[in-house]
Length: 339
Image 1 (cartoon, rainbow, N blue to C red):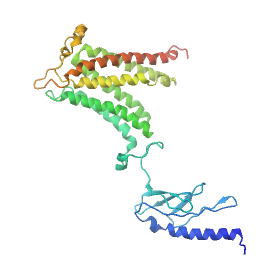
Image 2 (cartoon, rainbow, N blue to C red):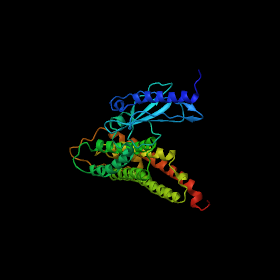
Image 3 (cartoon, rainbow, N blue to C red):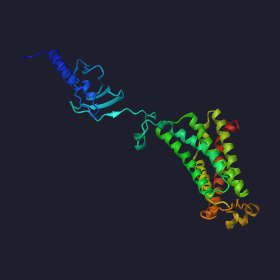
Image 4 (cartoon, rainbow, N blue to C red):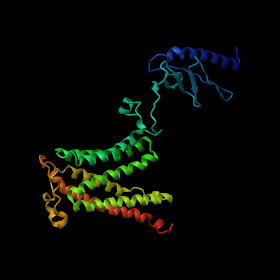
C-alpha cells in the first residue's frame, strides 16, 4: 500500500517534534551540568527546509542553512546566557557547553589564556592602556627616587629596575594591543609620548650625574625625538604619515637607548668617570663626573658597567642620527614641495 509523500512528511514532523519536545524541556536546561543532548531532524521537501522547534518558551533551536549543525541558546536558572554548539551528524550528541565570553577583545584575538580564564570579569581590553598609564605614573616616582631619600642605600638597583619595567611595558602594551585587536587612537598617541618622557627624564638625571660625557649623546637623542615627532605630525596633516613610520633602525635605537640607561642606572652612587680607563683620552669630557658620594652608601657591585653603558649610549646616539636622516630623506619630496 502506497502512502502519499505529504502524509509521510507530516508524520515525520510530528514524531520529530515530540522527541525534541521531551529532549529540550526546561528541566534539562535548568540543571548545572556542562553537557546537553539534542537530536534534530531536517526534512527538505519542495526546495524548502523545515526548521523544527520544540520545548518550552525559553528554549529555542536555530538551524543554519547547512545540514547537521545547530546553535542552541537558553537562559539558565541563574539568568546567565549560555550557548551550546551542537553537531548533529545523523542525530549525534552535542558538544560541551561553553560560556559566552564577556571580554571585549577583537574578534581575531586568540583564545583566553590561564589569566583571562581565571579573572573573566577583568577588563582585559583596557590592559594596554593601563600599562601606558603606569609608565606615565612611574616618571615622577623615578625622578623623586633619584634624589630622595638622601641616604637611600639601594638607590641604584631600585632606579634600574623601575626603568627596566617601564621599558618592558613600552613593548608589552603595543604587543597586547595588536594581538588582541584593541588598538585605540588615544593609546597610539600616549604610548610614544610616555616612552619619550621616561627616556628623557632618565637621560637628564644621568647627565647631571656624569656631566658632558652623557649630556652630549642625551642632547642628540632628545633633539632627534623632537624633530622626528614634529616631522611625523606634519606629514600626517598631508596624509603621508606612512612614509615616516617607525622602521627597524628606530627600533634598534630605542633598544640601545633603554638598555644603556638601564645598565648605567645600576652603577652605584659615588662611582665616577675615573673608574673607566679610556675616558682620560676624552679631555674635559672625561674629567669630573665623580657622582654624588653619599656617606654610608656602599660603592661596589655593578661599578664595572659604567664603561659598557657609556659605549652603548654613544652607539645609540649614532643610530639616532642615521635613523633620523632616513625619515627626513623619505619626507624630503614633500618638504621641498616636489609632491
